Structures are given as C-alpha cells and as structure tokens.
Image 1 (spheres, rainbow, N blue to C red):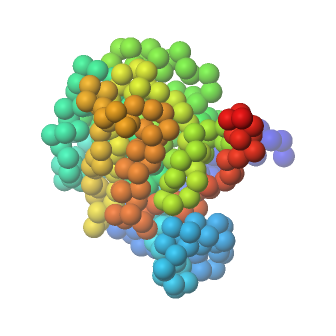
Image 2: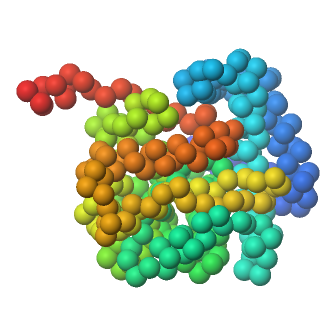
Length: 306
C-alpha cells in the first residue's frame, strides 16, 4: 500500500469513528471515554512512563495509586474532548451556547476581545482548548490560530474545517510571520498554545517547577506589537459538553509593570498564569504531552556571557 493510500484510509477510519460519535448521545460517549481511559491507562499503559514521570515531578507527594488515577482521568478528558469537537457544531450554536458555557470573567474578557487593539490570547494543553476558540467565533469575534500543519492532510483539513466553522482561521506555524503581522496591525485576535516546546534555543523559564523552553515571539507580540496578552482557559465542568471559560491574567502594554517589560520575565509570567489553571484542575492537563524535552545549553550560554 502506497503512503498516500495509507494516509487516506487512516482518514476514512477516523471519519467512520466520528460518524459513530456524532449519532450517539454525548452521555454515552462519556461512558465510552471512561472505558477507553481505563484501557489506555491500566491495560495498554500507553506512554505510561512519560505520564507518570511528568505527574510525579509536579506533584511529588502523590502516591502511585493517585498518579494512576490522575492519568486515567487525563485520558478521559482527552478523549471526551475529541467527542465534543465532533458534536459541538450540531449541539452548540448562537441561541443555546449559554446552556453549555459559563464565562467566569465575562466583563474583563469581553472588554479585551472587542477592544480596537490587537489581542494575543494564550492557553495551554488543558481542558478543551479547542472549544475556547469555537465559542469566541460563535460570539462573533473571529480569531487566528497559529498551528502546526498535520502530517495527514485529510485530518488537517478536517480539524481546520472545525476551527473555521465559526471564524477561527488557521495560520501555519512555518512561514506565517507576515500574516501574523497583518493580523496584529488590523487589530485582530491571535490565539496561541503557550506550552509548546521551542527547542534548546528558546526562552527557558520555570513551568510547573521544571525548566521549559518557550517561543520568544509570544512575549514579543505584546512588547513590540503592543497587543495585550490574555491568558485564558476552557475546562470541563460537571457534564460533557459543558465548559467554564476564564482568564487568569492580562498583561496590557498600556499598564505593564516595569518588572514584566522583558521577554524572559513576561514569558515566565504567562507560564505562571497557565500553571494556575492547571493546578485548579490538574486531571485535565495533557500529562502525555512532552512539554519538558531538552535542557538549556548551559555551556553555550556561559561562553556567550564570557
């Protein structure tokens, strides 16, 4: 089988699964997600060491049983997110979104979302971050998301179709600097996942107690582009397809403290705000995500300093 056919059949298999998800009640999907979570965590033990090491490093006081329980819950929320993405266009629309979404910091968030200035909205691999952009577009505030193009072009088209359903436009992570600049100059909204690994040459800060590399451009959008940075989250509440959207902090260039007027310090600030949301619901963070990969090149930095 050629590579192209293999990719296409993978996409067809995914569409078949999605078709089944879309016809099932969301409560039944949630029950199946719990079963899958048990299978992935307890039987297949998929990426068990990565997950366990990540949880143990952040929460060293947890027992083995507690880490396993958090891992199981993580798989549940992750697979539930996929089910919600499949069902949201049919279930959540402009006349009933209030039945599904609670916006905690409504006034503050709305003021920045409708401001004449550009906005950088930063979130992380936590809860159902896809629904954050979906709801923003649903409320008539389109945004532009910088995302890596997926290896499977059919799957990439499907995800982009969902994101663009209400006006969330995708900019590829490579070669989109000009497009991002145009969005900022026009007063648009840029949404970013702030917990992406940036390699050894990134800006190294402390994230959840461990060294992590971040992209410097996120802070530069605020420091150079004069765009307020809003750190937000979208997490599951008590029922499937029910969410809480909130804001853990805003760095506004018009009132930016002197101690944040620096790329490294502002990068540390927004990572601390992301950590606040994660600590509030740690079972919804993607511990399977390889956030902490490399270590800063101390020797190179020492030579540069000398």
